[in-house]
Image (tube, rainbow, N blue to C red; front, side):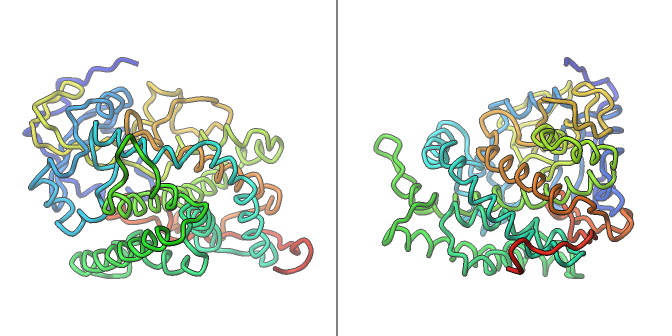
Length: 426
């Protein structure tokens, strides 16, 4: 898969207005724009309201960028660029492995990995199955649901809540805070009001996790936060700031990404009935289906920002030191150099080496948990709600606005034949 950007792909002084990526049409279907960029300007600088960023849209270029140590994730090294993008208040929630480079990243990741083992994730399988069944028990008798609110948001919140040791009584508080951040750009708020609301929500969540860490120090449990408090790497442990920030990271990495993906996956299946029929006929296809659905319409369209620590080139385009680089994972997943007919959903493709979980040293730690939740959910939805269908035309679905870092739906109205809950109403 070797690709060379054409001479017309742009230079570091060639800036394209980013207005197109802020339209509802783009949010509903970004893939034609990505295809045009891959063909005409695979590495291009885009101007947004707060900063310029180089977009990397081809698969091979994306893998190169995500593996290049000259593209830093250390926000503290970015100086004024960091402040322009995030603001000073964001530092308290960003002192974690996502926003660091080796060797500091390696230290933080080792400490988290010690408490995030495959054995721990596999041990969660019965609990994930129980949560899925409980949610479907409440939905099935109704005959209609907002899948986002009734299922997609609830499953990963309950799972990550169990993993982190968040009491169930606190779930609604966590949901309220995360929803403020998730739905930025909706509700008719001005950009200034959005920033204020996000800042307040982040401060509340930061205060919550500060209290949770303190509670786990006093009374440890069989949960990830307790394990992180005691995890060691030689003589080192996570600092208080790192613990709280890591909780914040794990909440969003393990919650919103999965909740948005579940909605995207259901829409993809319902708008491709022949593929849904394959799953209904052969439930053993579910694991492969999840991988193809992740490639086809994942919930993390772009990587988190990287900062060029020196002059470099990507795809033949010069990237000056200090530039922001954004890898468009969703575009890389639709690159025809990766798979044939990339805009088609084909649940029988097998392993495509998609990039929905990233690549390189920052490859997502939670892949096993995300796959466990998605496969469990799809298997049971196929059994419990086999005639699931959209309750509105697909064109009327409301996608998260451009201000969101994620791709997902604000709501997903569905209908199905109501069925009684086994053993009575729960």
